[in-house]
Image (cartoon, rainbow, N blue to C red; front, side, top):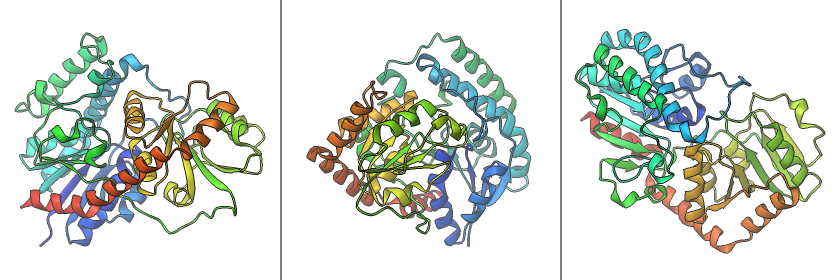
Length: 391
């Protein structure tokens, strides 16, 4: 007999999409999945088989052009406070629904603090999801990149508000241990070999690899051209200057370029687009990557893992601290390269791609990661682990 599994997530596409194949597998096995998300994600989540529990989010919409990357030094503090504010706004909306429809298990995203608190309040088992690098006592992004200031006033505000939030809704949770929960399991959507110090993470951390959801092929490549996919993801993508540099570097070349620019820019700001460059608000990355020779990416975990799963090296152009950590790992594991700071120079940009795709060590590194992804198990293994935690 199926059980009730509640997913709590933030509305960012890079956090929602990895969970959808897992939801599909769980519902195929007869479980009832409820999924807390926003109305603009409803159709996508319902298509995976879940019952949506909608909430009003404080997060910027996909088309908000004002969104900018937080400064590096305050990135961690600003991120924590932002998602605590999201939890404050969403917990009151969601908690009453689950008091009357108690789940057998809560699966919560690392940044979906409301799910973490509700699972503790209801005293039900929980699983934490990691669509980004895992942080614990063995490795943390702030320490590794020297970007954490314990005296940051924003961090102090976060701590004060977290204490008040937990006191109001779940006093049994210790604020000092809030970011270091011990759920039934941790699920990371990438192989263990991609994790810094991955061998030091105990068995409770399950690195299941990317959970990919391949739509029917909607994109067809041109003949006799290498394909280059360029994307800065769906969040910090208001960068017409960056896209213009790509167009200038590869326009009129032997490359066929697919630009995914999102909804935050005016397409007119790109100027004249040559015949060998396609511009899309959104594009099915897996469709394009199936035919691509290379990818230029902000180094978000989801896109990097999609590229690796299809054997495509990545030229990383990170913007946030999290993406910087991914980019460094790409270099360390020879999965690609990092875009030089002078990417505004068309010649340097084009040369970086051409050197990357001709480097045999990078081709070997990508092949090794592709095999690690296959061995990790994906959505089937993730669903197996979730069922084990139910039992």
